Length: 488
Image (cartoon, one colour):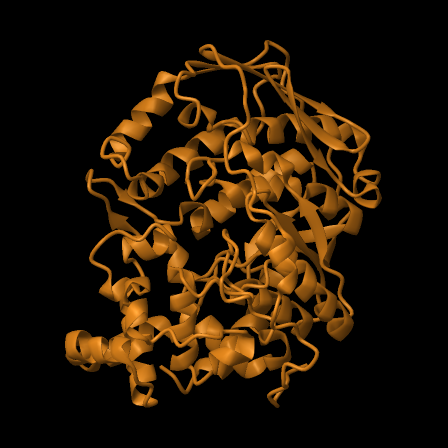
C-alpha cells in the first residue's frame, strides 16, 4: 500500500558507539604456500561448504535451518562451483602462480565466470595505482598465461526441481537505496520477500551497522533480515584493493541458492538500475562497463548460470532496471518514506569518524548527498551529520575530480557525470549553498541549463525492462510512471 505521509525516523539508530569496540580487521591475504601451483578442492559438510587451498581450510557456514533443507544431491555441485568461483582470480593476488589445479570436474560455471571476469577486468585496471596493471591488455594477458586444470571426472549436473513460487523472492539486501526500493516495491506488489545481508570479512563496521539497523527494521516491518557471513571473502584483495571483487554479486547468486530452496522462492531479485548499462573507453582503448556484472545483459547470463547449477526454474531479475539512481532516490523517499529512513548506502570499509552509518568521506556518500538535496530530501533524515557542500569535500564529487578517485569504479570512470550535474542543478534551484555549489555554478551551470530537458528525459525517464519478471512488469512500470511524470 502506498504511503503518502512522511514518517519521522522514530526509534531509529543514528549513533553507533558499538563500532568503537570493533578492531580494525587484519587486511592481508591468507598465508598460503604457493610454489607456482595452488591445489583447490571443495567439500560439502554438515555446516556448509569447505574450500581447501594447498592444505589450508576455509569454511562458509550456513544457518542449519537453511543448509539442512538444501538437497544433498545439490550440495556437492554448489560446493564445486563456489570453490571455483571464489578462487578463479587468485593468480592476480599470488603473482608466482602459474597453475590452478582443481580437484573437481569442469564446473558448470566455468565458461560463465571466464566471460564475466574478462569483461570486468577493464574496470579493475582503471582502479590500479601501478601503470602496468592499469593496462587492460596486461591484465588479460595474465589471465591467459595461467593454466586452469580440472580433474577428468564427468561434470555433475543437478536433477531438476521445480518446487518454487512465483510470488516469493530472495534478495541480497544492504540497506542501500536500491535494495530498500526493491523491498518496498515487492511489498507494494504483495510479493513475499526474504532479504539476506551477505557480510564480508574486511567490512566488520558495515556488518555491525546493518545488524543494528535490522533490529528496528524487523520491529517496524515484521521482516527478518537474514545474515550470512562470507568467510571465503578473505580470498579477495584486502586494504581497498580490487582483485577478486569483480564478480562479487555473481558469487552471491550461488551462495543464495540454499535460501532459494529453503524459502521455495521463484526469484532472486537484485537491484541493478539503468546506469549499470553505461559504457566508456579506457586508457588502453577497450570499451567497457564500469560495473559489468551489474549490467542487465550479464544479469540474464547470471540467471541462466544459477538456474542450471540450482537445478530449478529460478529466475534472477531487477525491478529497478528501467530507472536511474536519482529517480530511485526520488521514488524511495517520496512513496515509501518509512522505509527510506533506513537508507545506508556507504560500504564503511573503515571505521566511520562521524560515528554514524555513513563515512561521509567517499564518493558514494557525496553522490547520495547531492541526489537527496536535488529531490528535496534532508540528508539528516538518513543519518548524515556533516555538510558535504563545504570546501573540503570538493574531491568527493565526480564532476570536480581531476585526479583519480579510489572509492568506486563507477565514480572514477565519470560515467555518471551528467546525472550528477543534473542533481546539482536541481539542488542549486532549491537554494542550497556552499563552496561546492559555487564551484558547480561557475563550471557547469550554463551547460546544465542548456541541457536540462535532455538530462531530465534520461535520468527521470523509463528505459529498458528485460530483467523485470513478466508477471509484475506492468504494475512496476505504472508505479514508476506515476512517481516520475512531473519530473521529465
